[in-house]
Length: 207
Length: 207
Picture 1 (cartoon, each protein chain N blue to C red):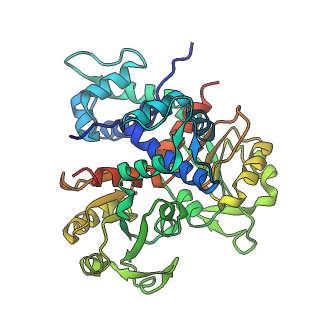
Picture 2: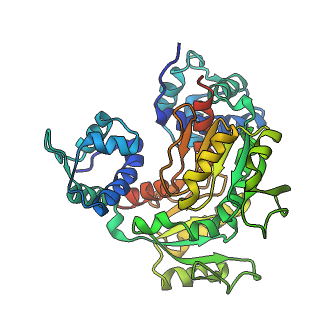
């Protein structure tokens, strides 16, 4: 039986996960929803409601078992799969993502970089060699890539998405500023960097 | 009187806004919640609920006036302020943001780039000169910067945030993978690029 979990809750789970990682490194074994809320600037009520979606974790008046809760959230998010990423388009954004430390802390690893620009093919970013995107299918099979990350210009995004699907990726993360379509069996997340900026604009306009 | 609008609704408003921009360019004057939903992959019920938060827009059985709805959402988001951004830290991520086309389409403009690396000070990204971050206060006043964007390493983020606040920015958008603290009067949005990736992992784990 699958429970429907709201997108907003799913979006908060990685925050809980990473905070619990830090808390665990501090050797804390139990954490209250108040303390978790203080660290994340989320109300304790919201935290208790989110976590209750997945079953009974906490003990009233005591708190949550840090290790147990961290593992449970990691499992819900599927982080134990240690997903392997290929980034297509190694411009500034692709290079930034190849260097982004938070991915590793959540168990994701970038295993391949692809570009069509002959001038950068063969060079490395963060120790990963850039391969010719014409060899996409071969590289994706060889490196057991699960997720294709699209950081090419908007005009090339749909074509790259289709090549990634044909090459066998299981999910697509699109940064190109355009909507792309993929078969319904392939989960797709469109990342739009201006969403956060618009939220900031909204809060700056409330005084 | 201020209405409390959920973060999830605020996060969808820029999507509505940009879709309405495109629809307007196609010379459509009226759009139904069904059509808006189809373009955005959001249910028509969710759209009607989100928009009802801000008052009566649509007419039953007809749809929404595209121009009116776009302007209303833009006003709610504060986009008419034409916020001016300074990016601090011109590495790969800072450069990617300086080139990001979606900002301009929402009325944001990047007016200053700051870095402490003498080797890149004086060079340009997307036509904007990189200035010495030691001159932050002067540049921010001179260029009437509203929003400071932090793309420096985690260890430098808190210091940069404090300098930005002291220099007079009205809001902060933090990409450094660490929590920073600023005075409660300064809106802060922490951007975490792995949130979307975790959501993708969640959806890929549901079969």
